[in-house]
Length: 303
Image (cartoon, rainbow, N blue to C red; front, top):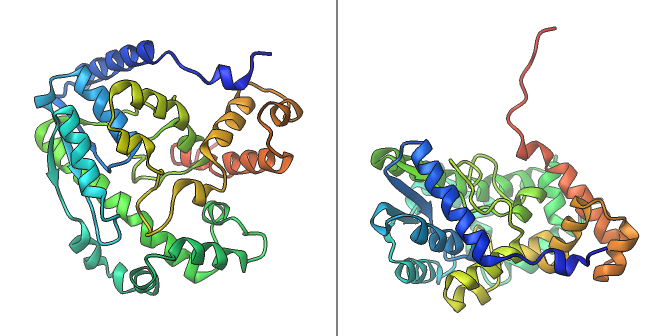
């Protein structure tokens, strides 16, 4: 058996050229004048920015930077760093006032996050442990809950990506630009995205690349080291990182997902990457629980 750690490696030059062709083909197929994306200051949108800058004329790319009250203090700086590196025009749209109009910052969740910015990660983990069978906050989000305070938290952060989606489509349609998604394969497989938020786009160029592959590709594309080395975060709740929310490192998660994709036995996956059986079962569970997020809405059929 080819080792998983070798199997997950990619030919960055070939992948880049193939994705460039994909982007150009889709812009032509959709009959669009250019491309628009949200630039968050994270590695996924930075990778897309790099790919777009190679695929089409940079004057035909627009990056929207959309911070809000809870965004990391370096979000705009990092997003502008990416845009500058790849010569992409940007528009900064602070969505705080729109979110205020929904009253989310006045909810219990909103007040809590405003007061506890520095320690929020630890506090949320502790709160989830109080709930039977929901010791992992990510599973709690996928399962849904009868606890009102948890529903409020989910509504509190998910609306942010949905508001960003509205802006992307508004400007994209005004300019006749294709909306480019930034989700990767890892996020897609485990449901680490907001349904009809960051998943609502026209195309997803890196949706067949695991997170660790995106990191390698980003390094090849010349994404600033500040971005490739920083800890990934959804930047929706203060203090939360991707790996803290998911409960596994991307290195192990990606290898487990690849092993499952290749139908490798659990025993061999454990031996290959040094993970526990519980970790594999956990990944299987979150892939299953999030399946509805990857499908179109179910429709009633007569007969």
